[in-house]
Image 1 (cartoon, rainbow, N blue to C red):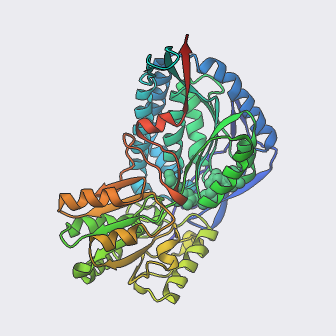
Image 2 (cartoon, rainbow, N blue to C red; image 1 turned 90 degrees about the horizontal axis):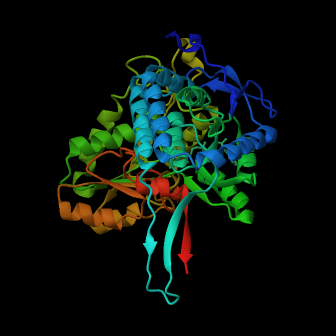
Image 3 (cartoon, rainbow, N blue to C red; image 1 turned 120 degrees about the vertical axis):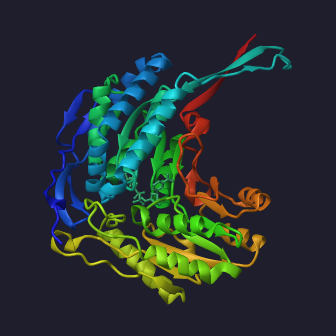
Length: 489
Ligand code: NAD
């Protein structure tokens, strides 16, 4: 099959610092590989410490004015940005496909979700309140609190949702009165380029939102910069540990949104069409399984176990893997060669550890331009040992682990037997049981009888290896404000 995948022009990527739009960075360049073909498709400039320093200085200068800009004006600019992004929905869907192989067929939904986050935090800009504190203190003084922005926030994001990650972080930070220096992942530079152009078109004052293409070294320079007052990071736990270590000497705070190994518990009274449907599609189809909150461990009550395994197999085998630009493609390639090999390694290890391969397990070999792309079959293992690597380590690819359980207590025990704690899913018609299990799961969020929806109104963010802090809801804007207590004698 020969397609137009390689024919579509990738945009040139720039360093966006204040009013500057630089085609080169002092850290050289990165060869972006199109995951759909395995071929280099663009040379990306990389910000070095010099540009990071300049961007932080510009952001610090902009902060002096932005923190005093009336919140309604911050909200107006954010809403304008959301409108401009919506108007470019098709372009963002195309850029997402170019960035990391996200199929065009689902890309528009991601744009709508992203603008819902921007508008939600526009709404918060003028709703941040403080409190008057007790007058009955020993000193008898009246007091109040001030909720204040930190200053420059360093934002570092990963590659699986290049637009949504920008939308989950930047609006909350700037609505609260901070300015930002943002480093997208080097693997997905294109969505950030258009986002930066629309920030300028929306009329944000120069320096409030700066976007720098860069790699791990650029990210490290941003974390270490003394004028960066807080870090907001989305990515893997190993990188997050390095970031926390770099923050430690100066006690720089950090919000960390990391990985997951989320349990999808299916009780015998569940609506199996719904539970098996989203449980399969999200874990082995959507984004080729590259989602932090996806339900990658399916815990199934013994009495319905074989029926669920058969249903999951049937659903997984309907998923169309292929060219991200083809209209019937549901699942595109995984992000790069390293991920392609790592995921196949996890599949081989699961088989070695005695799990039963239900479907998939191999690469999908396409032809023509796509012959070198990183396509994998939706892969399902049953009878997975809850202590094995497949049940314990995040695969971040289209691989589902099905595990049987006896009863409610056993399901909770298996679900919580993990170093992660991002999301949990409970499927049952018994409302009492749903609420009990939701309370017992040691995770940052729980979804009852449905798929995770990443809505802006609800806090999202995990425990343990899944991270620190929240995005979404009131908690999401509070991450970007510190509280000062003021007393009046
Ligand atoms: P990663 O940690 O390798 O990279 C993420 C970002 O960090 C990139 O921009 C990278 O350039 C930068 N980076 C790398 N080393 C750095 C350093 N030393 N200092 C500063 N920045 C550095 O990400 P990954 O492992 O490829 O991404 C996948 C992970 O992201 C998975 O674990 C996934 O679950 C997680 N994720 C979490 C969420 C969430 O919201 N919880 C969302 C999406 C992805």
